[in-house]
Length: 332
Image (tube, rainbow, N blue to C red; front, side):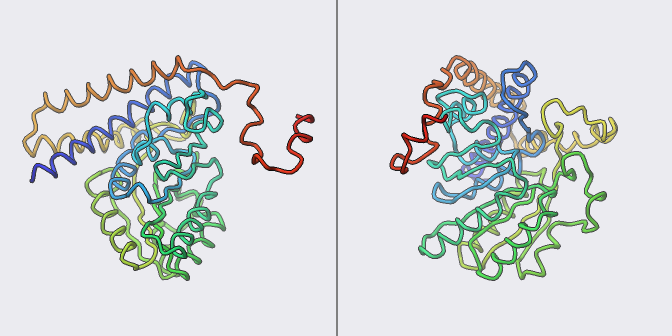
């Protein structure tokens, strides 16, 4: 292993912990009522975000769903601004107007998360098409869960992506649950990757709990897309250790199932890999403690940030030159 590759593995380890600690704070503050709405955590799925985003450039465009914290952080957004957005502060990515499920950071190419299941797929296809028409060397990536495959827009987007050979990577984070329903209860198609073949799209199903596997598969797929081979569907089999949302009692799962799946924790798997490569337990503990301290400082700072001024509630609702803007404002 070269020094560069070891440096990258350490970066992966840091990012996995960064997402885990970030969402740990979200869960804690949501339980105390400090987080508006119902945040959705990606605990256990962090390897997908880290492994895929490591292969993206700043110019590449990213789209996510309602479980987006990890994707935003892995794409390079500032943790402070991201946390401020989650708790509705003025310093947030969207000045506190979007919240947990509507994170946007144009500066990093993170063009939107959405609470609408499958609502991001067609948007990603549009971004990929725009890049193709403009002959720009960038791609679009869209993250979605296996539950999104029951939506018509999923198949419509696959059809157009294959037909037009769009530079688009579909990443299915298949955690086996569509909200509270197991896949076997809502689909006879066991593997999401099987949906790609009818549309002439290449696809692969991989272990989404191993960041090294995800990174290698994403790298290969993205290299092909950049070379003009058309869209690709990467299905990452993973596990959501947390509930569908903070507060979900998870009565649909047995304690035995949850205990078994926690053994596949992507952070622990990478830790064991690094130990086997010669890192010491003390060195890895130091990395974890450093990231933990950094994230605690971020959260403490974010909680002290100002709330948006209510007087600015109409800002960004209409464009500055929207006809009748002033007339419309008096009705609001």
